[in-house]
Amino acid sequence: MSANPKTLVLASGSPRRAELLLQVGVDFDVVLPRVEEVHREGESPQDYVQRLALEKARCVQSRLADCTSWVLAADTIGVCANRILEKPLDKADYESMMRAMSGKEHLVLTGVALVGPDLADVQQEFSRAVETVVTFRALQDAHIDAYWRTGEPQDKAGGYGIQGMGAMLVAGIRGSYSNVVGLPLETVAELFDEVGLNYWQDPAE
Ligand SMILES: Cc1cn([C@H]2C[C@H](O)[C@@H](COP(=O)(O)OP(=O)(O)OP(=O)(O)O)O2)c(=O)[nH]c1=O
Image 1: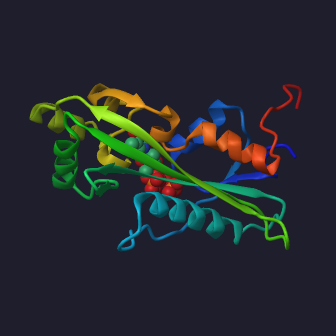
Image 2: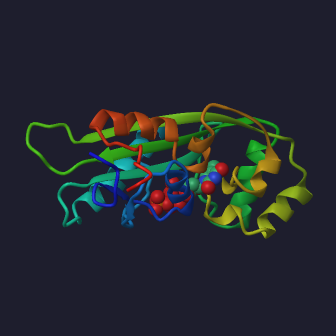
């Protein structure tokens, strides 16, 4: 099976996830998931991102007319000193996340899910949680303020984008870079292999 528009759907409104898939030459259609993103009490961060990724993929799969498609979805959060960092609610929330991460390590966790059409006897749901350790430089208040004004932090988990100006906040990372941006390509390749999706396109096609 080839990952052409008929067989892969990206259940995500994140332009970063689409760009990462395009980078590796995978064709896909986009359908936006409608899922409430609420952390449950006692749920581990790993379980949380995996559950959300699965819910996003299932939500889109259930709305597809084409029953041969696989649906890929993801969810990304930061975790710093046991605190879950999502998209900042406002500037004060952003500043408090930046102060918590300044000069320290935090985790970026992405849950990835690949959900196939409902077929009896065949496992059609695959998911993983992938962790990257990111270390931030010691941040000055003036830099925290200036970065907010770029408009980049507002729609990103943890309030920064490592692929943009947010790179200037980072001292180093251990693990997958694409995981921080929102879609761990190493794991996506593994999942595609598991379900037999061919991501090598014939240039003539
Ligand atoms: C940490 C980090 C996050 N992000 C982004 C990736 C995700 O788009 C976003 C986390 O929010 P998500 O809720 O995972 O995704 P989303 O709402 O943007 O899109 P969808 O649910 O439709 O798939 O943060 C970056 O772009 N760069 C970074 O360095």
